[in-house]
Length: 432
Image (cartoon, rainbow, N blue to C red; front, top):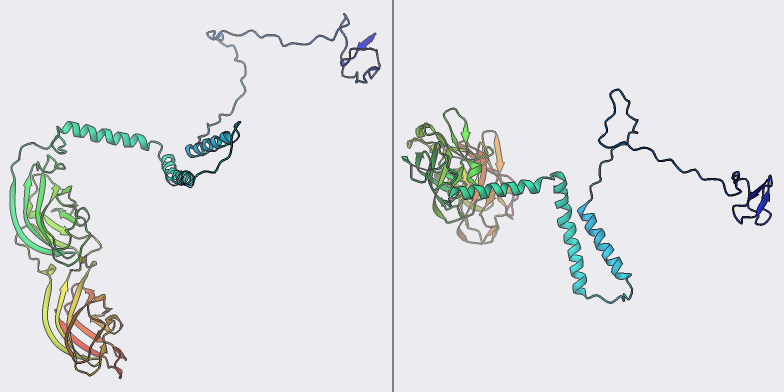
C-alpha cells in the first residue's frame, strides 16, 4: 500500500520516510483514505443552541462558566489625546504624496509654540482639578442655575430673596454717637437700628435685623486694608458673637476719605439693642469693645498725649522730648493683642560748629516699662543735622504693653552719631 506525498503528490511506498521526488518527510502524513485521497478532515460539530427564553429545569445544574476578571476601563487623558492627535496630523501631512518641506514663517512657529505652552499651562492644572472633582462642571452649572432661579424669583428687585418685604417695615433707632480709632480710621457709631428686615439689603432676614450706622474718616496719612467681615462682630448677652451678613462698604476707606456706612447683622427682633456690644478687631489685634448703650466709657481705647518738654543732652546734641502719645493704632495699622504704640516727638538743636549725624535710633535708643525693654519700630528723624542748626523735629515709635503708663527712655552709652567722644548712657523717665 502506497502513500501520497503532501508536497508534490508523488506515490511513495509504505514505510518509506522520505519522498523520492522532493524529499519531503512522510512521518507527518496520516493514513490515506480508502479511496486513495488525503485523510478526511475533522470539523467541529455544531452544538445545539438553547433559545434565550428557555429556562433550565428545576434542579438541573447550569454549565460551568469560567470566571473572567473584571477589568476597569482605562481613563484616557484629554491632554494626551490632544497632543497625540496633533503629532499624527503633522506626520500625515509630512509623508503625504507631493509634500514639499518649506520654511515656515517665524510668526506661524511662534503661534504654534505659544499654543503648546498655553495648552500645558492651562490644561494640566485644569485636568488635575477635574480628576480631583469630576463633578465640578455639574456643580458650577447647578450654582448658576440656582442664581438664575433666585433672580427670576425676585422679580428684579435687586436680589430680594422673597422673604424680605417690599415695603419698609417699622424701624426702631437708638442713637449712639461715640467715636473710636481703629487702624488709623476714626469710626463714629452714629446709631443702631432694628427692624424685621431692611429693603435696601438683599441679605436681610425676615426674622429680624440689626443695623449699625457708622461714619468713617481716614486721616492717618496712609491707606489701610481691613474688611468688616473679618474685624467686626456683635457680642450677644450670652457672650456669643455674630458677624455681619452685609455691609454698604465692605472695606476700609482710602486715605483722606470720609464717608457713611452701615453694617447689618441677622438677629431676632426680640434682641435688645442696649444689651449688645460692638467688637472691633481680630483675635490677633488690640480689640475695641463698644457697649451699644450710648453712654459707654471708651477712655481705655482713646489716644492719649502728654506734653513732656523734657531736655536731654546726648551725642553733642540738645534733644527735647516734646510730647509722648499712646495709641492703639498708627499709620493704618492696629497694635497687636495686649500692646499699644508709644510715639515720642523730639526737637533737636545743634550748637556746635560742625554737622552731627543722628543716624538710626534703633541702634542707640530703647524704651523700658517694667521688665520690658524694646527698640524702636520706626522713625521720622533725619539722618543728620547741620552746624548751628535749631528746630529739627521728628518722631520715634515703640510698641509697648497696653496697660503700662510709666516709661524710661534710654540713650545707650557708646560712641554714636559721629561725635568725637563716647557718650554716657542717659535715662529719662516720663508718664502717659
